[in-house]
Length: 348
Image 1 (cartoon, rainbow, N blue to C red):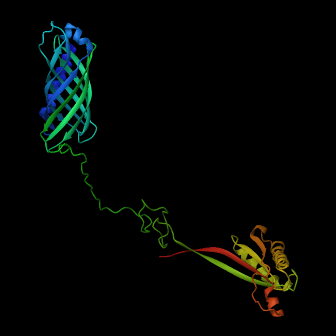
Image 2 (image 1 turned 60 degrees about the vertical axis):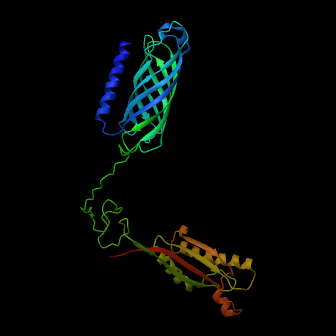
Image 3 (image 1 turned 90 degrees about the horizontal axis):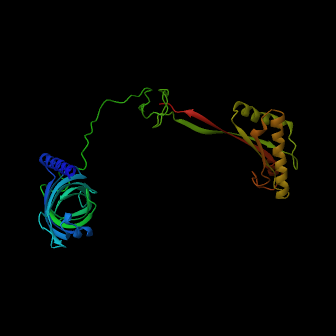
């Protein structure tokens, strides 16, 4: 009992100190509580043979943060007695609680604390419970709580349910502690460094040290214009033949020279035929013509075979649809189209 009284007195002094220092967040309340006592109490003189009870009480508390608070509580109980030996006096309870609110508006909370209870010899208990409040006016709210009271030096457990009303000395349940404080933003007008003078600050520049004459994008990287360079070469064939007349070797050499000057290029050699004969036959013939040019590029001019492709198109791409000797001669051909992508840096 001596230790529990020291704890109770210390807690009460802490709560009283918090009440004195709190400028806002203080509240008072009144309640009525119904208690269900441990069954062993009605058979023991140390508990004055009590059997359940109820009675009013008062509380005064303070919320010192959006979630935490404390209160001092005093209550009286009118117990029933199970024996004529009961004295029936000193029926009160006094103690403190620490409270935690689950929301800033205090609608649901939990609490725990120490209490000194009578009748008879008097006992100390620890208690814990849940509560909820319902504001109905600017400073008023209703509340209800359920709690369990566990004896400290003696083993017993009582249960209580209470309901009451509170008056708060502040107009809003969260006005005394702003949940969010505004942050002052200070703008510094000092410009950030742009070391390569490309108009993009170093912090955002993904391509540092670009030449000052280059046009750059939003990341500070040089803008490059890409375009396709093409070359077209025509080689004509005799009728029904894949033979290449030596007079066209100079044309093939132009293709080889261009590819050597542009090592990243590749070429597709398209073989074509005139209209006479079947589509299947012309496709085979055009493929042979394309392969004849491939062989000359690879064997005569040492172009890597991986850069050269031959493909037959048969008579699917006629240049002249007339059915005469001149048209047939024009359609029997090889078209070599070379593609390379050149890049050009854009200047300021």
